[in-house]
Length: 222
Image (cartoon, rainbow, N blue to C red; front, side):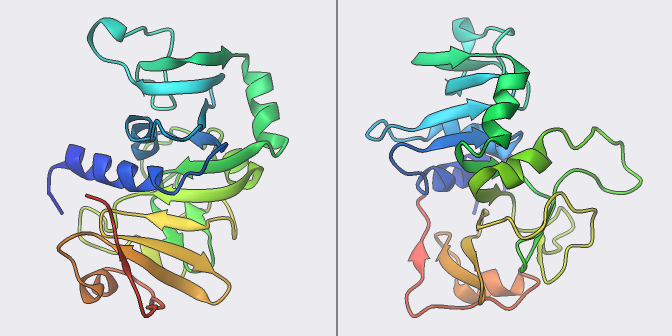
């Protein structure tokens, strides 16, 4: 996988997009998840929800498209689809807390084999606040985590037990990283697919928990 951080983000986002299904209402969290807008297939009808009050997020805005009154969860200018709708924060969280989201896609600092996730603070670092992450974890029918596989120090971010303050308990269903797609099941973490150029052994040695390896492991899209 490329060391270019922009290429890594787009690679992860592209593979997240392959997991979305016809008719899904999907929330995109800050960071890598917002890049999913650039990769959603035009062949299927998927509605993208922004926590700030928008259903119908389009790709990130560039050039003349930039409108700083229309931003995504990362506060970057985004675009709207032709059938988009805008609403206030109260209605937006009504959608989230009312169980109307099919999928939430969030970034994370750590995920463990129990489906627990930590994504809001590293103790001793500047606190930006948890935002709506807790609501998005429990309010959606499915939670996909999009993150890099290891820290900047090369340490696993997928662990037996999270070490950082938790955002949610037993909610994560799928992890998509720059190395693999991993399903969290009642039996453990199952390796669904690996990145081009990597082996199962490469993924396992960078993962802090023993993975379940099926007879057939797929390849991530490049």
